Length: 311
Image (cartoon, rainbow, N blue to C red; front, top):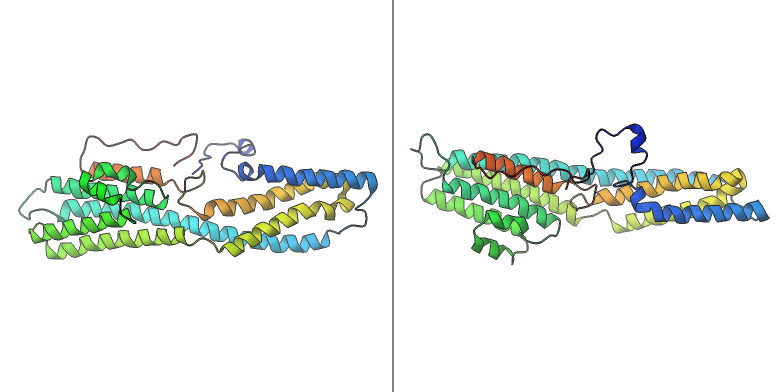
C-alpha cells in the first residue's frame, strides 16, 4: 500500500509510482501519437473537415463514465471488504490469544502463569496468520509459519492444499486433548471453539473475494469500450478544435485509461502490488501483539515502509 503522507499538493502532481500513469503511460503515448497524426493530416489536407462530430462521443463518454464508475466502486468494495476482514482478523487473533492464556490451565493455578502450553498454542495462532497470508498470495506454503510450528507438523503442511485450515484443525485437536486432561473447563471449550470458527469464517470470506473476480465479460467490455473511445476521439474532435486536439485527447485518455487501470489494480486486494493491502505489515503487527502477551524478549520490530510502500 502506497503512503503519500506529508506530500504537498504540488508534489502530488508529479507522483508516478503507484499511480495509474505507471501502468498506462505506453497506452497514453500511443493515443497521443494517433491524435498528433490525425491533427497533422487534418491541418495539411483537411481530410477530416467533414468527419465525425462531438455528439456521439459525448453520448458514449457519458455512458462509459457511468460504467467505469460502477466498476471502480465494485473494485473498491472488494478492496475495502478485504481490509475489514483483516481488521476483524486482528481482533479475533487477539481474542484467541487472550482466551488461551486465561481459560487454559489447571484451575488451582493462581496467579495463572504463562506455560509452554500457552506458548505453543499462541505460536500456532501466529503461524496461522502468516500461513493465511501466504495462502492468499499464492506464495510458498507454509512459508514464514514454519518457525512457529513443530518441525514435523510444518513438514506435513507442505502437502496440504489449505495449510491455514490444517493449522486451525490441529489447534482444535489440541483443545480437545487439553479438555480431556482437565485443563479446559467444558464451558470454556465452547468459547475457544467459537473463536476458531470465527477465524474459519474470516478466511472463507477472504477466499471468496480471491476466487470470485468481477465477471470477465464485463471487464473485457469496459477495456474494449475505453480503447475504442480514446483512439476514435481525435477523429471526432479535430474538425472542431483543430490543433488543440492532441492536448484534449491526452487529458480525456488519461482520465478514462487511468480509471480503467485503477479498477484492475484494486480488484484483487490480497496481492503484492503497490496499492494492494499491506498483509505483511498486518501479520507482523499481530505477531508483535501476541508475542507481547507471552512476555517474550524476542519481539520483532514493526515492518517499516520501503520507499513509502507498506507490504
